Every structure is written in C-alpha cells, then in structure tokens.
Image (cartoon, rainbow over all chains, first blue to last red; front, side, top):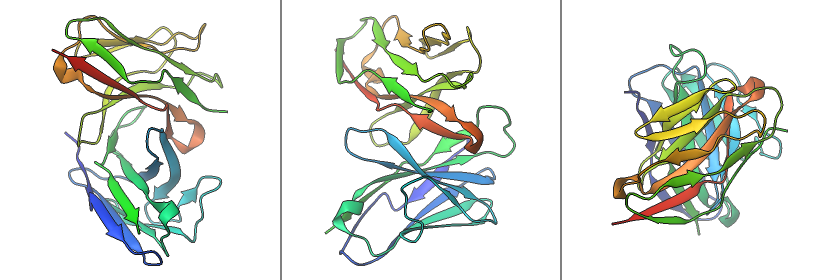
Length: 118
Length: 112
C-alpha cells in the first residue's frame, strides 16, 4: 500500500536554530501534502496545505515566515521551523494524497516528528 | 464551522467487550466522515469511511454509520481484542482545501 516516510522521527534542537522535516511519498505521487501539529492529548491541527510547484496555503494563525514549506516535487515536501523556540516543541505529522485516488480517499500519513526545542 | 467532537478517553475494556466511541460533527453540508487509528509508534491509518448519509463504513470488525439526523458517526465493535489497543480519531473533510479535520482522539486500552 501507499507509504509516506517522514524524517526525522525525533529531533532536539537549541532555541534559535532551524529544523527541517521531510515528508516523502515512497510509491505514489502527491500533488498535495498536508502538515499537522499535535499537542499532547489534543487533536491534530492543520497547519498548512502544500501544493507541488506553488506556494503553500497556511491556516489562520500559522506564521508563514516561521514554518516554511517547500513542495518541490511530486514526492517530497519539507517543513522548516525557523528560529525555533520552546513553544514550537510539538509533534508534527505530514499527510500526502495520492493523485491517482480520486474521491474521498487516498490520504496517507507519516509517522510524525517529535520536535523538542531546548 | 467545520469541527469534530469525540468522546474523551482513555477507554479501558476487557477483551471481547463491546466498544462504542462517540463522534459528532458540525453540519455544513454533508461531509465525508472517517475513522483513523494510530497504533503505538506508527502513523495514522484509515480504518473506515462513509461518504453520504446512512452509509455504513466497516473494516476489521469495526463499524460506523453516518447519521445526519444526529450528525454522528459513532465507532462500534462487538468484541474487542488486545490488538485493538490504539488511539482512534474521528475526522471529516474540510471544505475546499480537501484537508481532514480531526477530533481529539480516544485512546483505547484492551486488557486480556
């Protein structure tokens, strides 16, 4: 079945540094990928929709300059947390939609990245 | 708006017990509804879905019926197993963005 690889699975960084998270669709092409953030014991909150070859669409309240998203190919989207601070510590999850699967299905999720900013 | 509300966990059951996890959604049109499951250390996986009113999604013994009268999509299983221990998320499609809006998740722990 469809597989999405998300890397790294966990990262610890110093406050003020930047961290890049990769999301790859391994056996399918995805024109659209989604980035979510999950706080402890809370739901997944959509941060942005990443579209191949164009600018990402951010949800209200999400800082574009802080969470840089690049979707340069049909199989790769990256999320860069710039100048990270402790409040950015969270669990980040990506999801990719198979362009060949129409209708309401085709969403595959990565295993998530645990970011800890110290 | 587009939101999903599901019962809080954790839910602890004995093996072979009956499971219900409640989920309701806000009704703006007739969104497609989903249940996702997250096993420890893994990504979210689609468990079942329903795309229109009165549809019943089913998979691995789990069922959920799309009820527009009560705007609900409750997850049920007649006899749970230890291997069903996981976090379950109810979700709906979010309008034109085609992204998913999730409930808060319900942790299920099944004891032998």
